[in-house]
Image 1 (cartoon, rainbow, N blue to C red):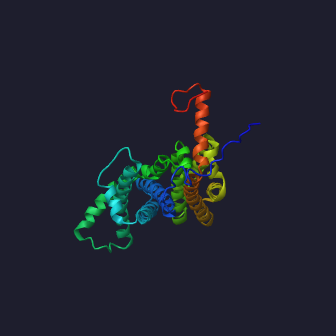
Image 2 (tube, helix red, strand yellow):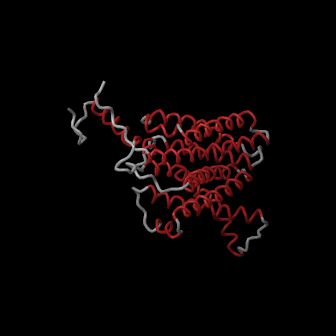
Image 3 (cartoon, one colour):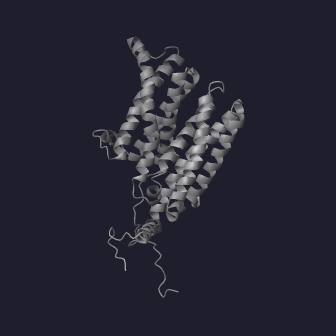
Length: 325
């Protein structure tokens, strides 16, 4: 038995080792809505190419509303709109934040044109477009496909952004978090389309939702398994852990409902709501886990010790300032 017990880290000169990100739950909403927009953009493009007019319309409108709300949440967290505009002044390929700003803007442009054409049709050409109406009609198809090009990056870049930080749980999940977020975006977009679209046209949405559920469950389990056990604790404990457990339950319930009763309107709507809730809880749970992990020095120090011990066990001692005695 050691005469001196192991040190229990509670602070670093009275401060956390890693400064928690100064983000509110507006950023968690931004994560969810961005994924929903990206998934809806892909679904709209698929509907466009296969002639499903109602699914195309609903998915285009969903993509536009989601991206506008996502941008609004981001700008609200930034404090002033000009801060977002300033991020577009340059492009830095090594910065997920810089690339993300351009991805969001590129997607929004295409989604906006495609949705404007749908609104004009829905209102009986009520929009005062005049001679621009033929231009809008000609541009809506390419615009919808342009939005689809940005849709997948939009759904995944926020995972890269979180994983690129020093926040212990987010950084520890950086290898698998993109797969979790893409799956979450897929089941959310499929769920919303099931909620808003007649079952006769919602077949692609059901398939996307089921694939999203399978991917979400597998990717989340793989992420937690591959992470350092200490860094993964915030994903399994406290409020974040409760959110993620509830998310998995809703995702599985929504997936089963989609498979067994997706052709019945009421079952499809309830399953869609469950899938939307699952996606939102995934984003909020991951966000909450990261914030909590930054507050406790244990989640920074112990994974570092574990990595150092693993390198020493492998005979690697030349890459650390800590000497091996």
